[in-house]
Amino acid sequence: MNYDVLIIGAGPGGIFSAYELALRAPGLKIGVFEAGHPLNKRACPINGTTIKSCIGCKSCSIMSGFGGAGAFSDGKYNITNDFGGTLYEYIGKKRALDLMKYVDDINMAYGGAGTKLYSTAGTKFKTICIQNDLHLLDASVRHLGTDINYVVLENLYAFLQDKVDFHFDTPVRGIRCVSGGYEVRCDSASYTCKQCIVSVGRSGSKWMEEICREMEIPTQSNRVDIGVRVELPAVVFSHLTDELYESKIVYRTQKYEDKVRTFCMNPKGAVVNENTNGIITVNGHSYEDPAKQTENTNFALLVAKHFSEPFKDSNGYGESIARLSNMLGGGVIVQRFGDLIRGQRSTPKRMEESFVTPTLNATPGDLSLVLPKRILDGIIEMLYALDKIAPGTANDDTLLYGVEVKFYNMEVAVDEHLETKYPGLYIIGDGSGITHSLSHASASGVHVARRIAGFQE
Ligand SMILES: Cc1cc2nc3c(=O)[nH]c(=O)nc-3n(C[C@H](O)[C@H](O)[C@H](O)COP(=O)(O)OP(=O)(O)OC[C@H]3O[C@@H](n4cnc5c(N)ncnc54)[C@H](O)[C@@H]3O)c2cc1C
Image (tube, rainbow, N blue to C red; front, side, top):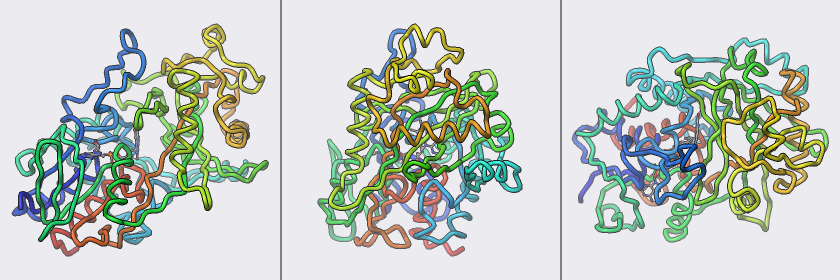
């Protein structure tokens, strides 16, 4: 065997598996195979001047490489079972929370010390939200910020580099069972291992589906979240963001009783493109460093769409809607809320006259030509609901970027150890469909590593 443990993917799930194994079982030979580049080679070519939009790199530096999709993220580690995944359904609520706290301790020890931990505990906003038919979810939020998140990753890499074999720019093409373990096939060679941890995240979702099909690992998928990214002057939300940093607020629409929620709030942040399997959607981040902050706050408003039989391709549905925006706008479309309400497209001229300066160079357009009516109606209703707790949210110049899609990987069949029906083959992180966040993905990595290391807590 080439390795005792072979890890596929160097996102938070893979990194924390490797970290915990190196710590608890230093005698094991560990290999990490990553489709993307090392951290210091990751750079998105969009520079705002010569390259203004996504050029479809072979390996997307935003989504792939050491640090995974989280490397340039806002580094918000939400310590909660209320959102970010359903890890607790597999390992129990207490253990899930304990592992998230453990991950937070490691992040603090590797460069995050001094960053702020926000909490909804005892906040007055819970009451204010309920009085306005809005529901604030409970969480503690460690905000590392994009810059400190990067430093933590650099330090974790420095710790791991002489304990683990890293194979960058090495996408894994296939896995098969062999006597005593697994064989992992890459483009130029194959490697064997006794145990294998698969942590391929969202960018590996299509590949993960293929592997599950080939190996007959049962999966299920029926959800996709679709919506827009809202950008407005930071002062509109500052009373909430100063105290909570991120507030996860849920609203049930009166028209359809659909749930709409805020997601990934970035105070004084920037809106960014995201490339998932060649489709350009929108996301956001913000920096801890005041010098890099903007005058705007952004957050997503998402409507969860659950499908029932016979339709199975929920991600395909989300992709089709995102493709429509790419077709009309060449990428992401931006529209002023006032234009949307008046049924007119935003034009470059109207955007110039706007009081809110966009932080992403997107194509002014008409989101009503892209988003299904039911979803758009839900978003509009939620904007008016939020306007009651943060007056100014429903202003004409509030910018809506579309589309934002949260693709959920199909949920793979694993047991409480996150082990598949094949002994020693584990599927963790966002690639398992069980987690959707930095904290949950990282915790799932620690959970599996401790099992492999035989670590007794
Ligand atoms: C712009 C942005 C901002 C975000 N902000 C936040 C935030 O503030 N808070 C939060 O909780 N979450 C955030 N997220 C989500 C978060 O990044 C993910 O939930 C998290 O990274 C999941 O970790 P993971 O290890 O499961 O997968 P990933 O981070 O996606 O890592 C998977 C890795 O596997 C590699 N890979 C894929 N297929 C293969 C293959 N076949 N062979 C080898 N390698 C492969 C990929 O290249 C990738 O590096 C954000 C995401 C984005 C894109």
